[in-house]
Length: 256
Ligand SMILES: Nc1ncnc2c1ncn2[C@@H]1O[C@H](COP(=O)(O)OP(=O)(O)OP(=O)(O)O)[C@@H](O)[C@H]1O
Image (cartoon, rainbow, N blue to C red):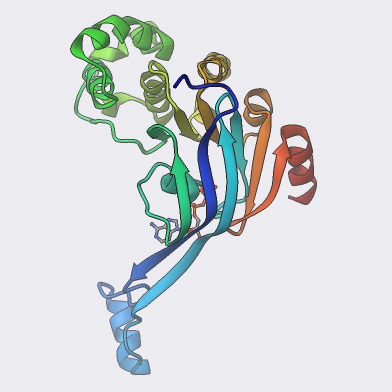
Protein backbone atom coordinates (compact mmCIF):
# COMPACT_ATOMS: atom_id res chain seq x y z
CA UNK A 1 0.00 0.00 0.00
CA UNK A 2 1.40 3.39 -0.92
CA UNK A 3 2.11 5.80 1.93
CA UNK A 4 0.04 8.94 1.59
CA UNK A 5 0.20 12.41 3.04
CA UNK A 6 -2.21 12.46 5.97
CA UNK A 7 -1.83 8.79 6.97
CA UNK A 8 -1.00 8.40 10.67
CA UNK A 9 2.66 7.64 11.44
CA UNK A 10 2.70 7.93 15.24
CA UNK A 11 -0.19 7.41 17.61
CA UNK A 12 0.52 8.12 21.27
CA UNK A 13 -2.23 6.88 23.57
CA UNK A 14 -2.05 8.12 27.16
CA UNK A 15 1.74 7.65 27.34
CA UNK A 16 3.46 7.76 30.72
CA UNK A 17 7.17 7.46 31.44
CA UNK A 18 8.55 7.21 34.93
CA UNK A 19 12.31 7.07 35.43
CA UNK A 20 13.44 5.01 38.39
CA UNK A 21 16.64 6.43 39.80
CA UNK A 22 18.45 3.93 42.00
CA UNK A 23 20.42 5.11 44.98
CA UNK A 24 19.36 8.70 44.40
CA UNK A 25 20.51 11.07 47.12
CA UNK A 26 22.40 8.26 48.85
CA UNK A 27 25.55 9.90 47.54
CA UNK A 28 27.39 6.68 48.27
CA UNK A 29 30.73 7.73 46.88
CA UNK A 30 30.99 11.02 48.68
CA UNK A 31 32.68 11.36 52.04
CA UNK A 32 30.44 14.27 53.01
CA UNK A 33 27.28 12.25 52.47
CA UNK A 34 28.73 9.23 54.32
CA UNK A 35 29.58 11.54 57.20
CA UNK A 36 26.13 13.09 57.11
CA UNK A 37 24.57 9.60 57.22
CA UNK A 38 26.71 8.77 60.26
CA UNK A 39 25.68 11.93 62.02
CA UNK A 40 21.98 11.83 61.16
CA UNK A 41 21.80 7.99 61.34
CA UNK A 42 19.60 8.08 58.23
CA UNK A 43 19.67 5.13 55.84
CA UNK A 44 20.72 5.64 52.25
CA UNK A 45 17.70 6.44 50.08
CA UNK A 46 16.40 3.65 47.84
CA UNK A 47 14.69 4.39 44.58
CA UNK A 48 13.44 7.80 43.52
CA UNK A 49 10.88 8.08 40.75
CA UNK A 50 10.70 10.88 38.23
CA UNK A 51 7.38 10.97 36.39
CA UNK A 52 8.66 12.70 33.25
CA UNK A 53 5.75 12.10 30.82
CA UNK A 54 2.22 12.11 32.23
CA UNK A 55 -0.55 10.89 29.96
CA UNK A 56 0.39 12.27 26.54
CA UNK A 57 -1.90 11.50 23.57
CA UNK A 58 -1.68 12.71 19.97
CA UNK A 59 -1.74 11.50 16.36
CA UNK A 60 1.03 12.54 13.95
CA UNK A 61 0.50 12.22 10.21
CA UNK A 62 2.59 11.90 7.07
CA UNK A 63 3.65 15.27 5.72
CA UNK A 64 3.48 16.99 9.09
CA UNK A 65 6.37 18.80 10.79
CA UNK A 66 5.58 19.06 14.47
CA UNK A 67 7.49 21.31 16.86
CA UNK A 68 7.87 20.18 20.48
CA UNK A 69 8.34 23.06 22.86
CA UNK A 70 8.36 23.54 26.62
CA UNK A 71 10.55 24.58 29.53
CA UNK A 72 13.72 22.70 30.51
CA UNK A 73 12.74 19.35 31.98
CA UNK A 74 9.18 19.37 30.62
CA UNK A 75 9.67 15.93 29.04
CA UNK A 76 10.37 16.69 25.35
CA UNK A 77 13.47 14.50 24.94
CA UNK A 78 11.92 11.75 27.04
CA UNK A 79 8.85 11.70 24.80
CA UNK A 80 11.04 11.48 21.67
CA UNK A 81 13.01 8.62 23.20
CA UNK A 82 9.72 6.80 23.83
CA UNK A 83 8.56 7.34 20.24
CA UNK A 84 11.94 6.11 18.98
CA UNK A 85 11.49 2.93 21.00
CA UNK A 86 14.55 3.63 23.18
CA UNK A 87 12.46 3.84 26.36
CA UNK A 88 9.43 1.60 26.76
CA UNK A 89 6.53 3.67 28.16
CA UNK A 90 5.63 2.75 31.73
CA UNK A 91 1.97 3.37 30.87
CA UNK A 92 -0.11 3.77 27.71
CA UNK A 93 0.83 2.77 24.18
CA UNK A 94 2.74 4.12 21.19
CA UNK A 95 1.93 2.86 17.70
CA UNK A 96 4.31 3.76 14.86
CA UNK A 97 4.22 3.11 11.14
CA UNK A 98 7.79 2.60 9.99
CA UNK A 99 11.00 2.96 11.94
CA UNK A 100 11.36 6.32 13.70
CA UNK A 101 14.90 7.76 13.68
CA UNK A 102 16.02 9.96 16.53
CA UNK A 103 18.67 12.51 15.72
CA UNK A 104 19.86 13.95 18.98
CA UNK A 105 22.67 16.26 19.88
CA UNK A 106 24.17 13.28 21.68
CA UNK A 107 23.75 10.74 18.89
CA UNK A 108 26.73 8.43 18.76
CA UNK A 109 29.66 9.53 16.67
CA UNK A 110 33.10 8.02 16.91
CA UNK A 111 35.29 10.80 18.19
CA UNK A 112 38.59 9.27 17.18
CA UNK A 113 37.47 8.55 13.65
CA UNK A 114 37.48 11.11 10.87
CA UNK A 115 34.33 12.84 9.64
CA UNK A 116 34.65 10.73 6.49
CA UNK A 117 34.59 7.42 8.43
CA UNK A 118 31.66 8.69 10.51
CA UNK A 119 29.68 9.50 7.38
CA UNK A 120 30.28 5.97 6.06
CA UNK A 121 29.46 4.31 9.40
CA UNK A 122 26.40 6.51 9.96
CA UNK A 123 25.02 5.65 6.51
CA UNK A 124 25.63 1.93 6.98
CA UNK A 125 23.93 2.15 10.39
CA UNK A 126 20.87 3.69 8.69
CA UNK A 127 20.71 0.63 6.45
CA UNK A 128 22.32 1.96 3.25
CA UNK A 129 24.31 -0.43 1.08
CA UNK A 130 27.98 0.31 0.30
CA UNK A 131 26.89 1.35 -3.18
CA UNK A 132 24.32 3.83 -1.76
CA UNK A 133 26.92 5.21 0.66
CA UNK A 134 29.26 5.85 -2.26
CA UNK A 135 26.45 7.62 -4.15
CA UNK A 136 25.51 9.85 -1.22
CA UNK A 137 28.96 10.56 0.24
CA UNK A 138 29.80 13.77 -1.65
CA UNK A 139 26.34 15.21 -1.16
CA UNK A 140 26.51 14.63 2.63
CA UNK A 141 29.99 16.14 2.95
CA UNK A 142 28.92 19.17 0.91
CA UNK A 143 25.61 19.62 2.75
CA UNK A 144 27.42 19.63 6.08
CA UNK A 145 30.01 22.05 4.70
CA UNK A 146 32.72 20.05 6.46
CA UNK A 147 34.54 19.36 3.19
CA UNK A 148 35.56 23.00 3.11
CA UNK A 149 35.15 24.63 6.48
CA UNK A 150 37.17 27.82 6.86
CA UNK A 151 39.25 26.60 3.94
CA UNK A 152 40.00 23.24 5.57
CA UNK A 153 38.77 19.76 4.67
CA UNK A 154 37.47 18.66 8.06
CA UNK A 155 36.19 15.33 6.73
CA UNK A 156 39.81 14.18 6.94
CA UNK A 157 40.14 15.16 10.61
CA UNK A 158 38.93 13.22 13.66
CA UNK A 159 35.57 14.26 15.09
CA UNK A 160 37.21 15.34 18.33
CA UNK A 161 38.57 18.36 16.47
CA UNK A 162 34.99 19.50 15.66
CA UNK A 163 33.05 22.04 17.69
CA UNK A 164 29.69 20.82 18.99
CA UNK A 165 27.91 22.84 16.30
CA UNK A 166 30.09 21.32 13.57
CA UNK A 167 29.39 17.80 14.89
CA UNK A 168 25.64 18.53 14.98
CA UNK A 169 25.79 19.69 11.36
CA UNK A 170 27.46 16.48 10.28
CA UNK A 171 24.93 14.37 12.20
CA UNK A 172 22.01 16.19 10.61
CA UNK A 173 23.54 15.88 7.13
CA UNK A 174 24.00 12.12 7.53
CA UNK A 175 20.44 11.59 8.78
CA UNK A 176 18.94 13.87 6.13
CA UNK A 177 20.53 11.89 3.29
CA UNK A 178 17.83 9.26 3.67
CA UNK A 179 14.04 9.48 3.55
CA UNK A 180 12.52 8.79 6.92
CA UNK A 181 9.03 7.71 7.91
CA UNK A 182 9.50 9.58 11.17
CA UNK A 183 12.53 11.80 11.72
CA UNK A 184 12.98 13.32 15.17
CA UNK A 185 15.46 16.11 15.64
CA UNK A 186 16.47 17.17 19.11
CA UNK A 187 17.89 20.71 19.04
CA UNK A 188 20.15 19.91 16.09
CA UNK A 189 19.27 23.05 14.20
CA UNK A 190 19.80 25.42 17.06
CA UNK A 191 23.53 24.67 17.02
CA UNK A 192 24.09 25.45 13.34
CA UNK A 193 24.79 28.92 12.03
CA UNK A 194 22.15 30.82 10.02
CA UNK A 195 23.34 29.51 6.66
CA UNK A 196 23.18 25.92 7.78
CA UNK A 197 19.83 26.46 9.49
CA UNK A 198 18.32 27.64 6.22
CA UNK A 199 19.68 24.62 4.36
CA UNK A 200 18.42 22.18 6.98
CA UNK A 201 15.00 23.83 7.14
CA UNK A 202 14.74 23.43 3.36
CA UNK A 203 15.73 19.78 3.70
CA UNK A 204 13.06 19.26 6.39
CA UNK A 205 10.44 20.66 4.01
CA UNK A 206 11.61 18.16 1.36
CA UNK A 207 11.44 15.27 3.83
CA UNK A 208 7.85 16.23 4.58
CA UNK A 209 7.00 16.15 0.89
CA UNK A 210 8.45 12.66 0.75
CA UNK A 211 5.54 11.84 3.06
CA UNK A 212 7.50 11.59 6.27
CA UNK A 213 6.74 13.11 9.65
CA UNK A 214 9.30 15.38 11.27
CA UNK A 215 9.43 16.17 14.98
CA UNK A 216 11.63 19.08 15.97
CA UNK A 217 12.53 19.85 19.58
CA UNK A 218 13.82 23.37 19.94
CA UNK A 219 13.97 26.33 22.26
CA UNK A 220 14.45 28.54 19.21
CA UNK A 221 11.00 29.81 18.22
CA UNK A 222 12.36 31.03 14.87
CA UNK A 223 13.32 27.49 13.79
CA UNK A 224 9.94 26.23 15.01
CA UNK A 225 8.03 28.95 13.14
CA UNK A 226 10.05 28.47 9.94
CA UNK A 227 9.77 24.70 9.90
CA UNK A 228 6.61 23.49 11.62
CA UNK A 229 2.93 24.16 11.01
CA UNK A 230 1.88 22.33 14.17
CA UNK A 231 3.29 22.64 17.68
CA UNK A 232 2.85 20.54 20.82
CA UNK A 233 3.62 22.43 24.03
CA UNK A 234 4.66 20.18 26.90
CA UNK A 235 4.49 21.41 30.46
CA UNK A 236 5.54 19.23 33.41
CA UNK A 237 5.08 16.10 31.28
CA UNK A 238 1.60 16.98 30.01
CA UNK A 239 0.36 18.52 26.78
CA UNK A 240 -0.58 22.09 27.57
CA UNK A 241 -1.50 22.95 24.00
CA UNK A 242 -1.49 21.22 20.59
CA UNK A 243 -2.39 23.25 17.51
CA UNK A 244 -1.27 25.57 14.70
CA UNK A 245 2.25 26.95 15.26
CA UNK A 246 1.29 30.61 15.48
CA UNK A 247 -1.38 30.04 18.14
CA UNK A 248 0.71 27.77 20.33
CA UNK A 249 3.95 29.75 20.07
CA UNK A 250 2.11 33.01 20.82
CA UNK A 251 0.56 31.48 23.95
CA UNK A 252 3.91 29.99 24.98
CA UNK A 253 5.71 33.30 24.55
CA UNK A 254 3.06 35.05 26.61
CA UNK A 255 3.24 32.47 29.37
CA UNK A 256 7.02 32.22 29.66
N1 LIG B 1 17.92 9.40 32.62
C1 LIG B 1 17.12 10.04 33.48
N2 LIG B 1 16.95 9.58 34.74
C2 LIG B 1 16.12 10.20 35.59
N3 LIG B 1 15.43 11.32 35.32
C3 LIG B 1 15.57 11.83 34.09
C4 LIG B 1 16.41 11.23 33.10
N4 LIG B 1 16.34 11.98 31.97
C5 LIG B 1 15.50 12.99 32.23
N5 LIG B 1 15.02 12.91 33.50
C6 LIG B 1 14.04 13.80 34.13
O1 LIG B 1 12.85 13.77 33.37
C7 LIG B 1 12.28 15.06 33.24
C8 LIG B 1 12.13 15.42 31.77
O2 LIG B 1 13.42 15.55 31.17
P1 LIG B 1 13.62 15.74 29.61
O3 LIG B 1 15.09 15.65 29.32
O4 LIG B 1 12.72 14.83 28.87
O5 LIG B 1 13.11 17.25 29.43
P2 LIG B 1 13.26 18.24 28.19
O6 LIG B 1 11.93 18.90 28.04
O7 LIG B 1 13.81 17.55 27.00
O8 LIG B 1 14.29 19.30 28.78
P3 LIG B 1 15.36 20.31 28.04
O9 LIG B 1 14.56 21.37 27.36
O10 LIG B 1 16.12 20.86 29.20
O11 LIG B 1 16.20 19.48 27.12
C9 LIG B 1 13.16 16.00 34.05
O12 LIG B 1 12.59 16.15 35.31
C10 LIG B 1 14.48 15.25 34.16
O13 LIG B 1 15.09 15.56 35.40
